[in-house]
Image 1 (cartoon, rainbow, N blue to C red):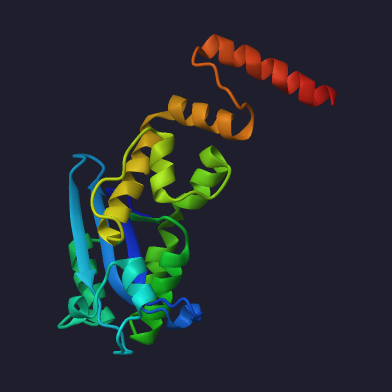
Image 2 (spheres, helix red, strand yellow):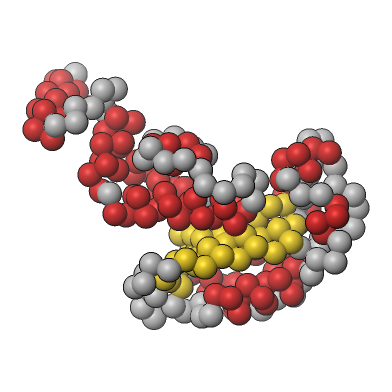
Length: 221
């Protein structure tokens, strides 16, 4: 596999209903993404509405949840064309690693790609380079599944951009990832508080002593 040159964080908004809807029918109606150049740290953005195959009016629930209105989808391209634009914007699957906040986005990509007869080999290449960052974050830092907004809060960060916009969801997921990657001590502090101690001393020597005592008590029990 080629050396990774860039990270691609992506997020879908989908058809939805408060009356229940099979996931297979929850077609993508917006794709947002950010591209992070590992060497230069430059960030590029992608945001496209998608015309679903079922051209029905969005429910009030879906409009409120996604922030998308019927007028936003007028004239929007179908999934296949938006995905082709997405691939062009990426500029090379083999040099990319793909991330999202839960596997639902990858599942959406696979289902809609199959519906629009997009090359299975192309989707397979993305899947081979895909990381469910929420799963990693839950196992390594937060203990429980948290929202992007709550993940940011663990690093004392505020959500940037417009909520319900998948491009900004992707961007803020990138921000969590960079904090996780570049602030390992802070990540450990969060992990210790979430998994082991309710109160974490900010002094590392005190923290180590407290951890030692706690672990010894656990072993004794």
